[in-house]
Amino acid sequence: MPPVDPLEWARHPKSDATLQHLRRHMKRDLRLAAIYAELVEINVCTAEGKLLCRWDGHKWVPN
Image (cartoon, rainbow, N blue to C red; front, side):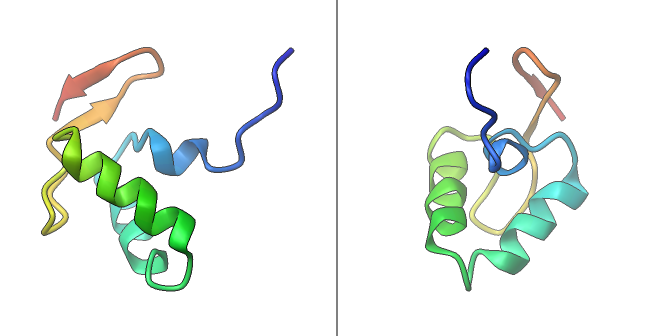
């Protein structure tokens, strides 16, 4: 079994609450800031924090 990624919740947000939690804490953790930048780049969310797609466990689905 592959190792568990402790930042999986941030890499694949399933709700707006998760995205907002990520945004609150990315100011103190550069790993979270990098993840957020990638989510914006791949159009999962906007730079302003609006979730456009959510992770359903297998793929991104429109929010």
